[in-house]
Structures are given as C-alpha cells and as structure tokens.
Length: 343
Image (cartoon, rainbow, N blue to C red):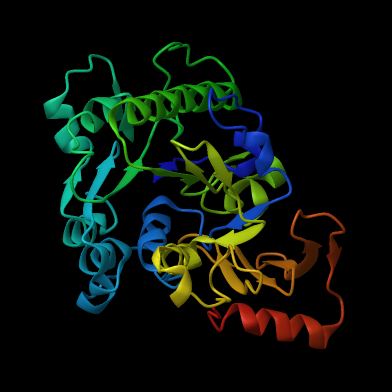
C-alpha cells in the first residue's frame, strides 16, 4: 500500500506511469473524512475518523482491531511500515509501532541511508523506499507493507530540480512525477523478484489546494482538491487494475478483510466499496478548525461554511452547486454533520 502525500485524484490523473493508466481514475470518487496526514493514516488502518480531535487518540481496543493486527492474527501476514516522514508527530508514535511489527520512519531511514541534500523539514528523498524495499523477504510469509511518501508535501521537494522559485503547483507536479517513477521501479523490482501475485494499492492521505476558493496546502477545505483522493488496486503479475466508483478510507479496512475471505464465505457487504450494495454516508471536517463541516449522503455532497453560515449542496463532482435555503432542510443537514454519522 503506497500512500502519496497531498495528492488529489485530479492531480494523479494526468501523470504517466509505465504500468498503470491513471486516467481510469476519472469519474470515480474516493473520499477521506479529514484532510490531515496523521488523522488520515490512522483512519486507513482503523476505519476511525475521530473528527472531534486534532491528534490520534488510540486505545488497546482500537489497536487490537486495526488492519495490521487483524492481518497478522487471521492470515499470518508479516506487517511493516516504511514512512519517509517522522512518526513523532501528533501521536503517531503512540499508535503505529503498536500495530505494525516493524516501523521504519524518517528518523531511522536517515541513519540507514546516506542521501546528501536529500532531506527537508517534513520528509526526505523518497527513493530511500526502494533501498529499504530490497531488504524485504518477498518469498515466505504473506506481507503487508504500508509505504508513506513525503516529497509532495510542501515545499514539494524534487531531487531533479531544486529551483524553489518555481511556482508551487509546478514543484508539486514534478515531485509527484518523481514519486510515480519510484512506484514504477518498485513494480519492476517486484515483477523480477517475487513469484507471488502482489496487490499494489495506491492512494493518498489527502489532496492539496493551490488557491481554489482561497485555500492553500491542506487542512481547511472540504472541497474535492483536498478530500477526493486516488484509490486503485493493481495486480502486478497479471497486470489487472481495479478502481471502485465510490469509496472512503473509513471502509478500507472492512473492504480489504472482506476481499480476503473465501468467495464461498463472502456476502454482499454495504461497507465493501467493491460491492454492488455499497453505500457511503460520511461526515467531513476540517482539521483543528470549525471553519467547514461536510456531509456525503444519498449521492450528494454538502459543505457548511461555518464562518459565513452558508450550506451548499452539490453533486459528488461538485457540479450543480446551490445554497440550501430552506431553514428546516438546512438545520436537519447540519445536525447530521454533528452526529458523526458513519457506516
């Protein structure tokens, strides 16, 4: 599982890969509940959004029901996290080492691999991932690896062009292209060194704003440039691509565990985003701020601008946007946003 940093679905669609046609992501929607890294990574592994807190708030029960622990217990997976940012941030160090058997973050990778001028405040040259990957045993136990990248985090580090005078959006695009080149190298390495079928999952922790609606970077907008992320599953040996039309990180754990069941035991699941019965009711919130709240409900998206007391209704692709003017409808929808409704 590769988690890109600050990459929306629309950003990835136009990038070229040797193996994956990202244009197939067009017309799909995969939504995260809060556009912030630590909270998003926690949601991917637990299904918990914890919208009412700015830090990860874990418990022994949450850890015991996390995806890495369940993969280990139920299917004898070895689990590993490779993260080119630091986990010593907003409680990540109190959660991820408790659920993964091995965690290699920036603080460790910097000591293991010499990458002169390959560091910046939030991360490092993501090419260290390939070096770390070559130490993995691909032949014995089944293996679940979560890889978190960093180059597409502001200031959008690139190893091929250090010109910080370039516009931010161009630096971000260049950093993303370098990340996709890295992913292509990982795919080639797996094709060469593993005889087992490997599912590569590509997604992102959140998107990134570049001035849309006055928003920049991430955290404080619930529009699609920050919460609609790419999601695909790619079978490396057989070259097959799977993309759900609609999904959310709150259902990733349940979907993956559902897919691992024998087909004879599998039932149609409304929380499996590859199921024909899938339904998404999702509450959205900006990080550490009440400036916006949102709701995805009945194939519609609603965003409440708290600072302006305006509620907008729109399609999932944010077309046909209109204000909700009826007071009863407005109050009912805003109330749902505060009920932390989740399937």
